[in-house]
Length: 130
Image 1 (cartoon, rainbow, N blue to C red):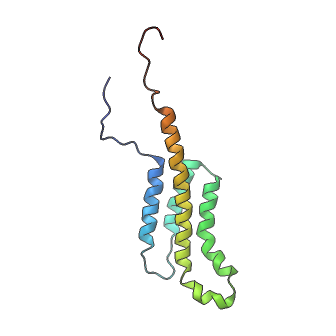
Image 2 (image 1 turned 180 degrees about the horizontal axis):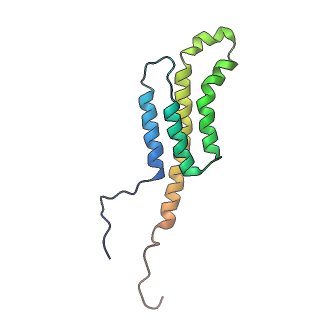
Image 3 (image 1 turned 45 degrees about the vertical axis):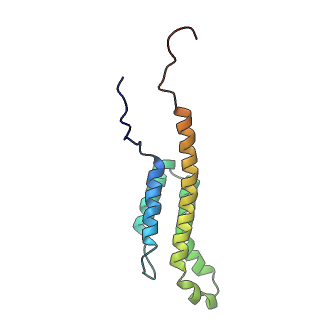
């Protein structure tokens, strides 16, 4: 039986979410007053769809985080809108990050459980009385 290359590392589903979180950290350093995240959000929703399927609560949670910016603007009294306007992009990034970190934690726990369940399945007991 051939040996598996010890350098090989199987790609995990959580790797895609980690990459998105890293991208989000890069977006946080943009200085635009009203940054646009449509492409990032579409990519993230696509990743979540591939992992969990349509209609999963994590997809809805992420969509809620993306519109949280608009809700904050609508729910603020007029006198408070000016002071908070500068924080809205930061708040949107923070909400996205929090949701993605939560999803990543759950996914990594699931991947660990799956890995533990699969360990040893490709091995057979030695022949003989058992």
